Image 1 (cartoon, one colour):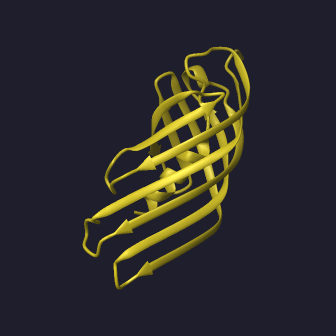
Image 2 (cartoon, rainbow, N blue to C red):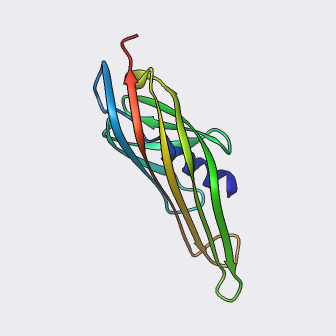
Length: 151
């Protein structure tokens, strides 16, 4: 579960994708990631330089690939602060994390992507068994994205 959480965080942190445009673009970009089951897909929504909906593919605990229709963005992330809690009486697990991310490249229309910013991640799981009754993982990231795929 920690790897899935890290993947989502990284994905959110990646924050960038320019939907269907070629050439150069630069500016603010935000990304929201959401996962509603421990084994479900992680949806990524980018707004700004990239306006697209895609999915997150965790590559490691600190790197992710955001897959969009027009290309991919690669993101690395680092937690700076985190807090975990578990309430035994109602089996509620919580994790909150904040940190920084860096866009380390891209493919397709996002070739030459770079940038970075900050993110906040939240995870809540309710249930005492192997399969939680409720599960929600979200990441909000914002920062700057530069794409120059002409070179």
